[in-house]
Length: 373
View 1 (cartoon, rainbow, N blue to C red):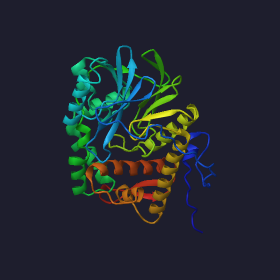
View 2: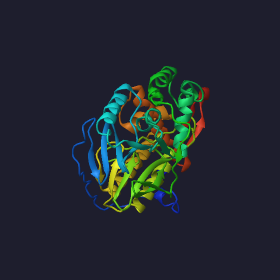
View 3: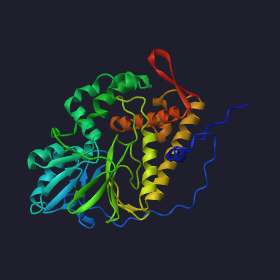
View 4: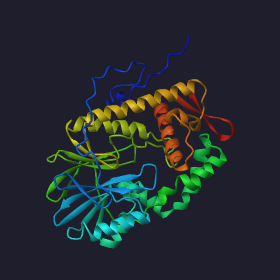
């Protein structure tokens, strides 16, 4: 008799009392449409007020994802800044124009960093040096950024090389990924050596308003989100966005981590905590309402990817590298995109291994093989 295939129901993870087992996906109510109050983003160098005392700016990125959203929050005589953009010459030049224009009479008072990725924290150190303003961040995100900044050459050494080779990339692919795919991690100005720690379940006062500090794992280890109950909005960073799923990756420093499990738990908490009409101000794409609907879509997205991985492994695919086109539905040749795609594929593998749907076994020449558990 054929072994029944495990149907992974990611919603079970948001309730830790439920265990994974063979099951049918529960029937869902018809989803509500997302609502986009602002159909057009501000042009580079301009700002749009999206909530009382909150200005939305969009900065360019030199990647396929070509922008990042940052926000100015009224803070007394100036503005607190949430996220900074990447450290490259065009973004520095744009900030210099903003400092002489929009921010000339209402200067920046402090920097709040949502997480360690260069498009969000890249210019925090540069702005700190120019303006003398302090950095606020979670401890994990600060230290993660600091580690890469202090030793960027480590990205082309162990354990990164064996991490990629062991999961099925050949030597040429590994060299290309390490030399070009991870270059973006170096696009961060040196951080200030002190910071103000943000912790979950605490609050942050900005301009006379109280923000609940929320944190979530998956996309990064301890990403900060700021929820303004009175204002009815959340600065959701990259944890929940309207049109794209944040990258959920396993990295060489934690090869057996389960970031997808952490991400799904975070989504469950956000759905329980936030009122359905909360305005989400994300790190990319447009601000939107309809968080419960979007959270359900994200969970279903990862359910489908888990099912695709299980089906491919049952058909004989035996490495994470071979599963990349299965998870993403296409071959990926760009090294920058491949660094994300490989890490996200392994995140789905590790998620299934943790839940005993897959197993990883030593293979030939130090390679690792995937089998059904």
